Length: 116
Image (cartoon, rainbow, N blue to C red; front, side, top):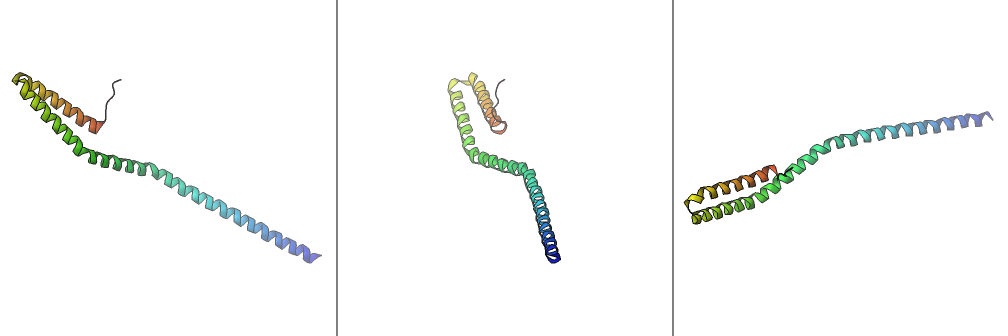
């Protein structure tokens, strides 16, 4: 009878030791995973910001030649109209063209402004 009691105690101790080791290992692994995920989440805003900035710059670079061509054509059109209207209106036409060009450049770099 004593041998069965001894075997039961040894088996119970081994089982409890294994269960405790498995639990501690699980908790440590879970904590390490949480720390790793938290670090990744902390880095995400910077990574997303860099990607968005790169995308905006790429889009601006691809659209800039078309924008420049439109501004150039607008100036040419305004100057042609100004020469037809006479010398007294030339200065106002040039001013209007310059204002339109400045507004276009402002819109490109600052975005459209909405009235409040």
